[in-house]
Length: 215
Image 1 (spheres, rainbow, N blue to C red):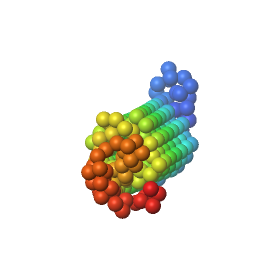
Image 2 (image 1 turned 135 degrees about the vertical axis):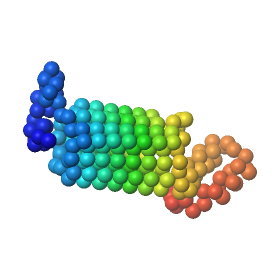
Image 3 (image 1 turned 180 degrees about the horizontal axis):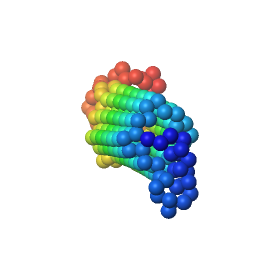
Image 4 (image 1 turned 120 degrees about the horizontal axis):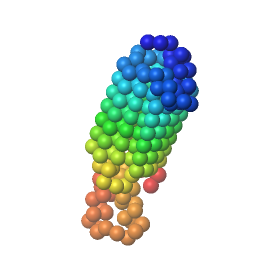
């Protein structure tokens, strides 16, 4: 493989003149473990099956990049732009995606276990069947995200904007279920809705949820 700096230089030329197709970054199956790609411009780059384990990709621009099946385990993607990127089946286990822009990204079947997605923008992202166990989604924007079949057990959803539509059917643990019931109960009480029996059952179920003192 060519020197990564040369590849990035040529890719920048291609971005400005796409008739020079041979200069587009083709990093399929590339070994980029622990690589320094901080601030790199890899828009539309082909990174399918690339190994980016432990790479520093902070603030990089990967908009529309193809990262399908890529290994991004423990990679640092803090503040990275992954808008509309293809991350289907990608391994993002333990990755730092704090504040990353994943608007419209394809994360279907991706492994996001233990990932840090605090403050990430997942507006309209496709998270169908994604594994998000133990991930931090606090303060994340999930508006319009498709979570159908995703595994959110032991996820931190505090202050996130969870979508309320049929695409938000996901697996959750008791902690999250209690959290959702507590909020639904509060809405019913404020609205004067629900039978006494229903409210009693909900109160019993949500006992000792992790933010009980806030209510």
